Image 1 (cartoon, chains in turn green, red):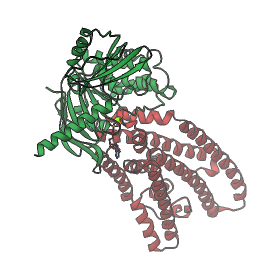
Image 2: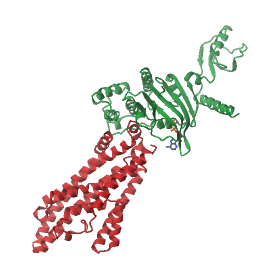
Image 3: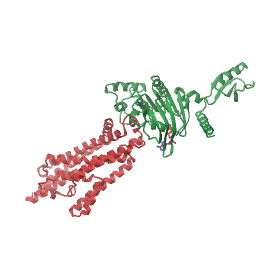
Image 4: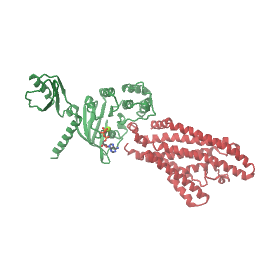
Amino acid sequence: MSVIETNALTKTYNGKGGISDVTLSVGEGIIYGFLGPNGSGKSTFVRTLLGLLQPTSGEGYILGEPIGTTKSREQVGYLPELFRYPDWLTGRQLLESHAELCKIPVRQRKKRIEEVVELVGMTGRENGRISGFSKGMSQRIGLACAILNDPKVVFLDEPTSALDPIGRKDVRDLMVYLRDQGKTVFLNSHLLYEVESVCDHVSIVHQGDMVAQGPWRELMVTEAKVEVVTDQPITVPMPAFVTEYQHKNERDRTRMIFQLENESDIPNIIHYLSSHQTPIYEVKPITPHLEDVFLYWVNQKKENMYVDNQ
Amino acid sequence: MWTISKLTFKEMISKKIFLITIIMTFVFLALYGTAIYFAAKESANAAGAIQGTEAILMQKFFASQLLGVGLYFSSFITALLAILSSVSAISGEVASHQIDTWLMRPISRAQFVLGKFIGLVILMMVYAGSLFFGIVLLHQGIGGEWMALDFQPMQLIKAVSVFVIQPFVLIAFGILLSTRMTTLNAGIVCIILYGASFIGGFIEQLGAVIDKANLVNIGIVTSLIFPVDSMYRKMTVFLFETSDNPLSIAQGGMFTSISSPSNVMVWYAVLYGVIGVVVSIYIFKKRDV
Ligand SMILES: Nc1ncnc2c1ncn2[C@@H]1O[C@H](COP(=O)(O)OP(=O)(O)OP(=O)(O)O)[C@@H](O)[C@H]1O
Ligand SMILES: [Mg+2]
């Protein structure tokens, strides 16, 4: 059974903005990346799933329950992108209130709160008032809140926006930990590297449209580029699978960038160079810029539409 | 739902404004007590010259006016607090996005609105009730024999019950506005309606004194639109009028009531509040946050 399922789900604000016509199905026990530039409709989508926004059309289900019902939110956690919590509460009081709303039995509350506080690295600081929390601390307490009820599915909307590099790594580890426990994590992000390192499956959204979805590796390899550092300009003729190349001389090194037909051509080019006695100092695959990936899939979608219309 | 009520209640109490309100309330009560003390002393001296029925009439008039003025201001303070606390109840949380994490929990929109309403109403009703008894006790206690009015326990209970309907109606109405409007707009609308209700009530009293049905009708219409001032009037009727007391009419004046709202009006006000909450829930169910 899919944990999240939508069918042509659309939410627009008086006909403008928002996100349209999203059909997807998210399986159990994976980290699902929802990737798109600013204003592409990621937050709108998640907020619609959680019943905060009324869908304009289409339908959606969480754990088989139609969105908007209280039942659909029973086993769900959420960290909003604008995480604001009542600042007159202490971190612990906030978690206690949420535990009450989630109907966590009184006797388990204390223990569970300590667990989640530990998981987000806030131990010892949870008794402070939220008004005295830094932005990063607020985001951490928000994360604690999101996983408090041991939810089957967690929506994280840009969960690392306020965190330092260590915090980012903590969140990554947390997501992997949740996945290993069989939970589903739905991650909204515009940061390619964030999605890259943890997501099993991604969707790419652009200007309110879903342009692509699939396993991470397949989507990101829109082009195969590799950077090779040698100590002299290459003079040998290029094999056919190199579609384009450029070189840059730097003191005693030459930096070559090869554009290849396929990712599998990367070992081929290395093999080719070394068999022609070119000394290789460094090999680095070039991951495409997020923008390029977006543009690639946006164009791809347009082409497909063109084909469809024929 | 109770969690939301508890949170609302706690939030109000934890805010600095609450402490200030409590302190200012005590200042107000202290001032009122002082005023009563001196008024009682002076009046007792002055009244020494007059004798008989006239003296009793005058005593009753003064005493009821003084108690009336105390209660009027209490009702005014309560109304302002009720308005200020309710107009931001929903809109404030929506604007700050604090509402997101509450509403994503398995609670319905109806439970959220009801929770807010109950939290605020309990707090404000307790406040209004305490203020009512504070004023009455000060008046009866400090005012001494000369100032004290005879009240049956039943009269006091009826009066305070009507007195707390006012915050009930105002909070229901404030929450209703706050499900649709921004805090500031809702506050302005509420205060203007409250003012209109006050003026309507005043015109109604005036109409009753000079016996002009038109004026009385204006008052009735305003209290139908916004049944707040009429609850204050009804409270004074319960407090000052007993059917077997021929003198009660003579106790009229600015702060008591000559034209008395009917009992139906009380039920109307309660229904008004209940409908306000129901409509709030209905509106809020469909709203994007
Ligand atoms: N309340 C609103 N009223 C009108 N338009 C809105 C509203 N909220 C969002 N939009 C529009 O909907 C589109 C999608 O916004 P959304 O916040 O979902 O984007 P996002 O992908 O989450 O962006 P970001 O990465 O900046 O968080 C934007 O074009 C935005 O202008
Ligand atoms: Mg967003």
